[in-house]
Structures are given as structure tokens and as C-alpha cells.
Length: 121
Image 1 (cartoon, rainbow, N blue to C red):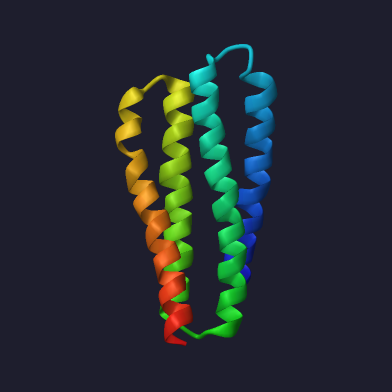
Image 2 (image 1 turned 120 degrees about the vertical axis):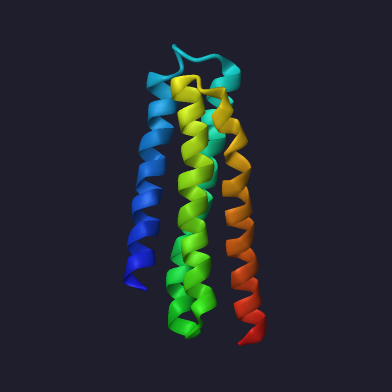
């Protein structure tokens, strides 16, 4: 429980920092499309940081490996989905957009695993 709570809090705090960075430091240097892309990364990072807090709670309710797997799926999703969007915007490496859906699949997997655990328990 402590690990996923710590990861959730850390990713949540980092999302706030990155959101402020995007709103203040990047606003004058990036176009509206790139700013919107960066903001999507921040938004999904925050959503899934909160999901990690849910996973931390769920580990106290159900002793299931699927809860742990859901937590790791969210971590991978944050790193791959949001990380690829940040990299795309900050480096101009547009090919990173091809990586982003893999992070989305990881998010979907995490939610499916949580639902499966709740239904099964």
C-alpha cells in the first residue's frame, strides 16, 4: 500500500509542477497545439496519480495480485503515455506520438484489472 500511495503522491505533485511549467515557462515558446498536447500529458498523469491512490486503498480491501498489477499498469501508463507527450513537445521528436497509445493501453489495462478485482472479490 505504501509504495502505490507514495508513487501516486509523487506523480500527483510532479503533475502540478509540470502543469505550472507548461502554463508559465512554455506558454511563450510553444504553439497552442503543442501546449494542448503537453496539457493532455499533465491531465492524464494527474488522473492516474489519483488512480494509484485508489490502488493503495484497494490493497487494504483485497489481497489480490490483480490490484498490484493494476498499480504497475498505471505507473507504466504514466511514464509511457505522459512521458511520450512531454518528450514529443519538448524535443520536437514527433515519432514519440507513435509510442503514446501503448501508455493508453496500459491505463485501460489498469482500470480493467481494478474492475475485475472488485467484481471477483
